[in-house]
Image 1 (cartoon, rainbow, N blue to C red):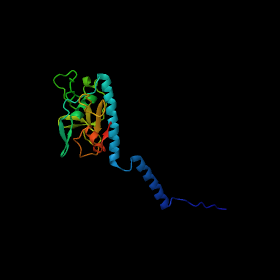
Image 2 (cartoon, rainbow, N blue to C red):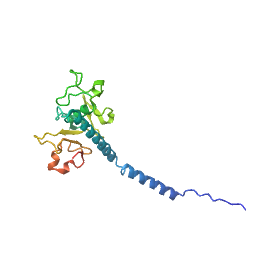
Image 3 (cartoon, helix red, strand yellow):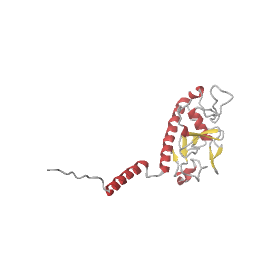
Image 4 (cartoon, rainbow, N blue to C red):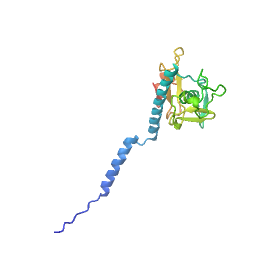
Length: 205
């Protein structure tokens, strides 16, 4: 007696169901297909890395870095001007490349040139809080090097001054404007009077 085995392949409906399940799983993992959400996640991770490095800086020097010129600005995108003084300070304090953007700090072993040049020398690497800083974490704007979020814009940072009461936190305020393209000159203290102002920001308060 000859046994005939009937081949069983996937029907079109079964294939569509499997593909649909795969698409659903990928959507859940990626975050509902929102490209902005991945930028937010990268920015959040970068912010946490900066916070950890700032704590190392504080342990090493006994204080948090202070921008030499917090009001310095630059055009980051066409028609979009941002404050970059704090982002320059953070870049230098955490990467070790230069020191002229950090208030009260002299460049180690190089008295006549404390500007950033995009490279970290042997002397400078000793002072780096993030020695192997990923290139996507910083960028050059004009003659300046700054720390940036995943949106390519400068991180904002204010060192706390108890007398001036210039921050929300007792140590420092750190934030990214993220998708907010409107309130790009607002500061952390502005959100106390208007909480919706920083609704899109990625911040440490």
